[in-house]
Structures are given as C-alpha cells and as structure tokens.
Length: 302
Image (cartoon, rainbow, N blue to C red):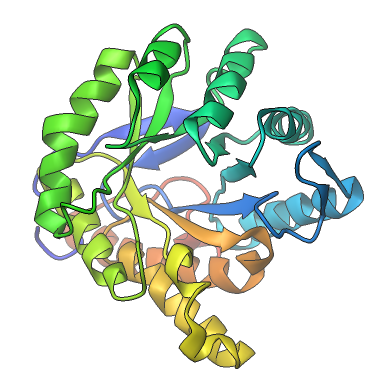
C-alpha cells in the first residue's frame, strides 16, 4: 500500500443506493450504529419487540441530520434476542427509513426466520445478514441457501486464529467460499474486535483485507470499549477513548465502522468524517482521486 492507496483493485458495492468500498478518499466511511440492543433504554419488552417509537424516530432523525452535516452515511445494526421481536424491529425500520440494515439476531435461530421474512416481503436487497462465521451450522447454511438475500457480513473470528494474517487466511479459504456457495453476492468483512487490545489486530486485519482482496471491510470497537472499565467512570475520558478506538480502523482503510449504540452518533460521526476528509484531501492532490458527491471533504471544512 502506498500512503492512503491500496495496490489491488478495490470492490465497491451499491446496497440500495449506499456505496461502500473502494480506494480511500472516494466513498465515505459508513457508520453503523446499533439499535434495539440488549439494555437499550427505548426497548420496553425485548421478547415482544415493543419500544418507544417516538424516541426511536428521534434517534433516526438525528442520524439524518448528522449525515447532512458531515457526509457520513449510515446503515443500522438492528439487534434482536427473539425472532418475533427482531421481525418487528426490522419492519419498523424498513417503514421509517430507506437505509440498508444489518439483520443482527444474537443466534442463527433468531436471524434465519427473519431473513426468510425479509426475503418474502421485498427487503432482500436492504437486509444484510449478520453474520456468516466459523461457528455456522449446516441448518443455517441450508436455510439461507433457500433465500435470495444479496449481502452478508463475514465475521473473521475464531479463538484458534487470533492474528491479523490468520483472520485474512480464514476469510479467503473458508468464509468467502462458503458465502458464495450459499448464494450471497455482496460481502462486508468484519475483522472482529474481541477485547480492547485486539482493536489493533482487527484494524491491521482491515488493512490486510483491503490490500489482499479489496473487499469492503470494517470492525466494531464498541464490542470492547463498552466493557473498558478503566475508562468507563469518566464520561469525557471514555468518549475520547472510544473515538480513538473507532477511528483507528478508519485510518487504516476501513470502509465501515460499527461504533456501538445509536446514541453515540453525535460524538463519533464527526471524528470519522475528519479522518475521511484528511485522506480524501491527500489523495485528491497526489493521485487525482475524485471524492464522491457529498463526501466529508466537501462538508466539514466549508
């Protein structure tokens, strides 16, 4: 990799109008906040999938405002613990927004029935199955093979493979062929943050995926920072630490970041936009890269 430019051709996907992937400085990094997650204050019954709709709508509206201000687009990580609840969340999100969303049931038994529902009601292009992992079951693979979802997340996590290089090898040899065999056509690679120290490893793996395979890639530092007891007691310290953890992968080429609860958006999005703008400015002058319309470079400095 030359500075801010990868040596192999980069894959770019269009998921319902949202462009993700490519060389740094072209498409902005996609922010992916989580909603309806365990413990989310707007959820009133996680088994039935009931929640405070006005508060949820306010959160969604705030993401639209931030997108207009910064140029950072978003997808939604829709989390559910039970199939009925997840389906209700998905139907509401599909009605209230136009953005793609991650179908994030905590187990395959939660995800696959809702994946089938999405396939039946015309959401097969917007629903991104999260995720295909080394822990997949044959029942899950068979169920997904009967559907027509286009995109999935490939989770490169295995306790036996902790190095960045090992994760990329597993992706190339196992996960990607499996996802193609199932019938998926678009692949978002999650290099998996396990704990705080692994943020560096996951970020390096992002760089390696881009340089070796050119696929859209990212990770979720919030998996670790929300459990970072050393900094949790001081709000300002925690926020700065979380932002640093989030943008580490962006600086190394990540195309998306799963930055945690949707309420984090106001103080995370601007940091992502700044890193994007710096890279785009550099590449515009050195490589004549043309930023996409509405890129942070055209938004946050003028």
